[in-house]
Amino acid sequence: MNNEICFNPFSLSGKRILVTGATSGLGEAIAQSCARMGAEMIVTGRDLDRLASSLDALYLISDLPHLSVPADLTIDEQRAELVAALGTEIDGLVHSAGISQLCPVRMMSAARLYEVQAINVEAPVMLTQALLKKKMVGIGGSILFISSIAAHIGVAGVSAYSGTKAALIAISRCLAMEVVNRRIRVNCLSPALVETSMLDRISLVVGAMKCEDSNYPLGFGKPEDVANAAIFMLSDASRWITGTTLVMDGGLTIS
Image (cartoon, rainbow, N blue to C red):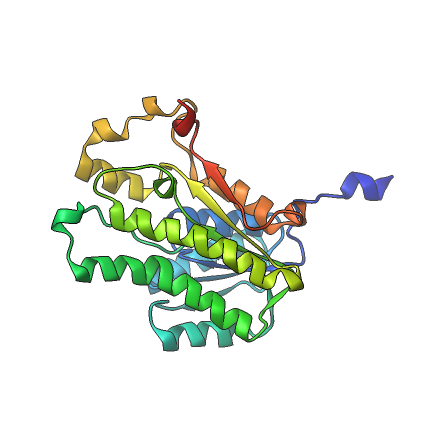
């Protein structure tokens, strides 16, 4: 009876999880939430000071051997260094690093388009490729891409960002079929506006009226809302789910 009481399918105890973009916003929230659920965390980002702060926060949560590895994931050599630094295989991978460029198509430059694609698509896909090539994702592991509601609806001025997030969804479905023989699951989360620094930047550019939470029956999301969904996708509770995308929009698309 005691074993039944203690059973928690959402527990991440005994799992090693890598989170990219873990120095702010959703990535930081996901890393800390996973640590609270018992995971040993590996976090990566480009800003050394913020990465150090992220690691310190993890050690305040648990005394597991958490690790931080600075890396610009658009650079081949730094992706390879990150993979090498892991040492042993991981059980979960969350691709949270990304940027949003607000720019209508008529004003878009090739350089801006390539930058968004490099960070939002090329970096996570090629990091995944490097990990799979070395069999660093354990059997029964979980790979999670952070997509966006922008991949599902039309929003003026975010075509480059929307395109990259839609690409992640398509790629994840194909990847899910490629790794199913190792029972590795591949899924996406598609959150709408969440109360992070990115929301603040969007409000400054497009105006507060475009970011009214009155369009969201349940209001804007909070980072922990997305983190809780990530925990589900990384845990054994989602062991029968792969190749899918969970839309998290507070009711935006049904209102």
